[in-house]
Length: 169
Image (cartoon, rainbow, N blue to C red; front, side):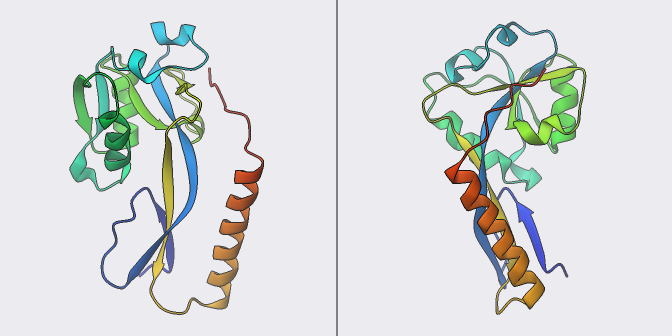
């Protein structure tokens, strides 16, 4: 058993707790040569003019539910090209030109892929994805308390002084 974990879903089994740990802005993931790269930030309605590669609802990543909530408020219905089981598959299909995707930009940047580019979603309050801290119910051990406290304090500081959005390549 794991003592602690992180996930994009707060759906947990009996005996586990989920606490919102931090949020990240949603970014648009596009092929390296794509018309949306003309914009520093991409409006949702502009992104929805293109086919989408989205997380599969059965993948269990939590990404599907959060992105679906963003798309439900969209002015036009999305055109879904494919649904995938992982971020890696999504990035491969986006890089190959099958469509565009939505993800946490900072997570995608760490993969340093030359076949894709990242743009933040435009808007006064762009949509965010929440990452949850998962742990067993009951009193956590002292090391876990310190880790939980550290994560929550970092989140509080980040909320008070948000870093500038990374635009990507």
